[in-house]
Length: 274
Image (tube, rainbow, N blue to C red; front, side, top):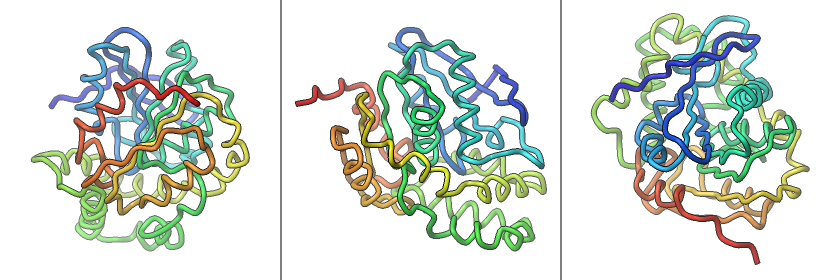
């Protein structure tokens, strides 16, 4: 599929590339790491049959600018997201966020003063102790990982991506996700962004989670090995009015493992409280 981001938005640290499609009530799709908006290639056009859909690549990811010296913290991503929302002029959009996109969306809502209509988080970083596994090793030893030979780096990234899916990728998809991280510049960009993503940026808003009043939906793959089900349960305890839905047989990447079931939830009405 030819996935294009033809629009540009200038941030203090470089250009964020974005696109919109469809018309109607706005919905914004927020990706995580180490992915890009390509993750939404099936979901965005389907939603665009009835809504205006916005997609973008975070700074340092995908087709957006990658360069030394960029601030790629969750706080910076949230500031950029708030700027994008202002640029689009989207009134109280629905926001759908995955992986670290969840933390970006929550910071934008709780600390940047954005106004969402509703929020869907799936297999997402939200708070608690989420520095774990390979991510924790990269945080502790970023300089070592930056020195990996290119073949070892690519094997590591490919293995990490495969670990996120419970059913495997369709032909060509793994290569598309690997492309931004290949070569000397891509390898530097990969560890640059990972080394700046920290729990401190989610700890800053955790005390505000209980005050969220807008509709919230949590969707989680039962076989998620990146953020196992206890992370969904943690968030549900913090925001008890949130809906919680499980997708059996799916891993971290619901867009790849269960796109039809994910779409069914994204197009359903939120439950009425009470």
